Every structure is written in C-alpha cells, then in structure tokens.
Length: 388
Image 1: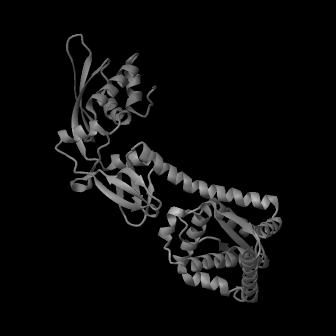
Image 2 (image 1 turned 30 degrees about the vertical axis):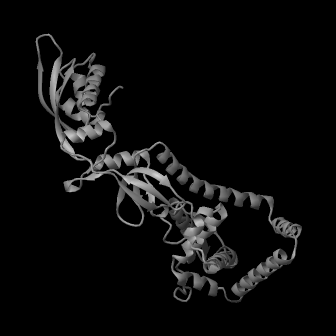
Image 3 (image 1 turned 30 degrees about the horizontal axis):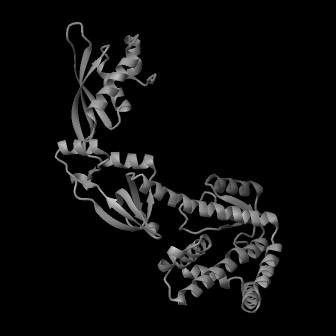
C-alpha cells in the first residue's frame, strides 16, 4: 500500500473483524483497527463511527499488539478446540450419544469445536501457520502445559491436583475470573432460556410456530415431548389452495372453519432436531398465522347511536377489529325512533368471530357517539385517533 502511494495521499488502516460470516448479526462483535501512522484522524474517526453505527465494538491497536493478542485468542483457542475434537473422535462415542450426559462446559466446548469443524478449514490452518516462530512457541507451550497436567493427574494425589488448579487460578486476577464467569453465565443463560421456552410451550400446550434453519419451511402445532437433542412436535395445520393455511387456534376457530367446509386432518407427529429450528415469539406467531389464514367476506349488521359517515366506518373498523383487513359500507337505516343500524361488508380471516366483531364495533360507536357532529365526523374519517 505504501509503495502504491508514495506521495502519502491515502489514509491506510487494517481492519480485523473478529468473527466470521456465520454470525448473522454484527451487533456486539469485536473489530480491531490498526491505522497506519499516516492515517488522517478525521478519516479514522469516520471509519470508527461508521462501524460503530452498525453495532460493532471497535478497538484500536498497533499491528504488534494485534498479532500478540490473536495468537492467544485465535491460534491457541483453535488449537484447544481441535485437540478436544480429535481426542473425542476416537473414543467410539458419537456426539449425539453424549448429549444426554452433557454438562454446560462440555456443551459450550463441543459447540465451538463443531462450529470450527463446519467452517472453512483453510482459514484455521492459515491462522496456525501465519505466525511463524511465534506461533510455534505458543503450540509448544500448550504441549508443555498439557504434559505437566497429565503428569500431575497420572502420578499425583487429589491434593496435588487441587494445588495445581489453585496455582493456575492464582495467575488470574479476581476481576478476570469474574469477567469470564459472567460471560459463561450469559452463555448458559441463553441456552437455558431456549430450553425454558420449549418447556413452557410443552407444559401449557401452547400453539407455536417453528422456523426451520436447515430448510425453507415452518411448522405449526404443539411440542409434545422434549429430549436432549430434539423435540417431538405435533403438527396440526391444514394447507389450502393458493398457499393459505388453516390453523385450529381454539374450538371456536375449528367450528368457524367447519362452517366454511374446512376440516382438519389427523395431527402429524414429527421429530425435529433442536439445532434445526427457532421458535417465533408470541407476537410473531400471531402475525404469521393471521397473514396466511384464508380470507372471506362477511356481512355485519350493527347498531349505532349516531349516523356516522361511510368513511368513518370504512376507516376505523379494520383498525379496531382483530382479523378484519377491509370494511365496506353498504347501507344505513333506522326504524322509527330506534337506533341507527348500519350494514357493513368486511373482508376478514375465515375464522372471524362475528359476534365478537359486532360487539367491538357497537362498543366503538357507543363510546365515541356522544356529542357527535360534522367536525367530529371529519376528524374520525381522517387521521384522528379513537379516544378509548
């Protein structure tokens, strides 16, 4: 770079993102910036601000500081993971066989080892080789430490082992140990949160949506059982023509679909690996199901204390009624001194609860009908807000 810019017109900086393409979100990830001595401060500041706006945590370092640090955080770490994976392989037990006996340390170490093995081997081989003599010294130090530990545990007593572990801990400050324990707690907590979500869904028999990570599909139904590496899932949906999806949300929904000639098949039981799916949140689940539900038009006849304009009905009914996406005004009439009645045609999900929808509309009309006048009508027909 310097040879290509002898007049020093450019600001030169090395950027090392400390994560790979399998990380879906850069927020919270580290990036090391090694700026050339000729780099203009305003250029570096712009780059740091741009990266930080994307959620990256940017640290400045010299090339020497960077290389010394990554020999520990990358070269040594990858060597440990590869050693663990290679030691585990000849044991004769498959990873899946060990899952029922997993501990948090095993789960985390195996997860990172599997992540490494499933990535580009050339990247990791290059990291081991690019540090030259300094890299060889790190690997030799690792071997010496392993030999020392093996000697202690092979020939020593339990107190000897305790003494060795305490000696290792003494080289770490209390703050360093606390920081590592905190990171471990967060990592284990994230796994526990996923397992707790599965447990709650199973215990309450809550309808849920699973998004597959290994294929472009979703499953809708209930979690029946939970094992170490998979769930038994009961799928209850019925796919309809045109890509619509009928879901038996409750008994009322089932009856509503039956009135429209839609009957559900016998539930299908599936075994789904935990690593292949994520669970949509409750709000995502509701939106996903509603977006794919079949649509139908219904005529709704409601009473109203005042004669709202057609625009008011057409504007507000879809906003206040769950499952209604469009409303059309048909007629307004009145019998003698009785209340006004309005006939609407709504386009909504096929399982729409008509009685509930009618009550919602009449409550809306009653709440906002007092003191109604032309100005109020104009407000509600436009962008005014309901005062409920």
